[in-house]
Length: 138
Image (cartoon, rainbow, N blue to C red; front, side):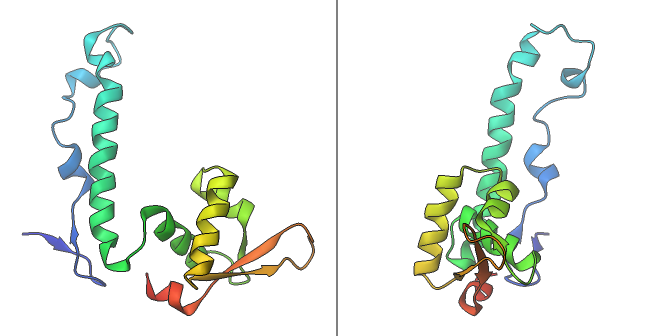
């Protein structure tokens, strides 16, 4: 029986299902030499796990009509300070590049999902606020 999101009814795929049987307990042993073949497979297995999780995330947010990065910004703003977050705070929370986040926010502002308001104490910064159309995406 599939688990469904209460809000959007999208299927929820548990991480355990995605990661099951990727590595056996023996392969995770700390006693393996650093050059063991099992350890060399780890980057591939991590990439495969990330891909599976990313695909599951994309399916779970498909109702929103937003990219994973856009959805992450919307979620970060909805859970953050009601007075808004700075671009730097959003960049740090996403572990991303400032230029990437700047262009992402610009596109989202054009979609009327968020707005920028001058920061009350730092003239160089803006507060990013979630608009009602952005909240609807969540």
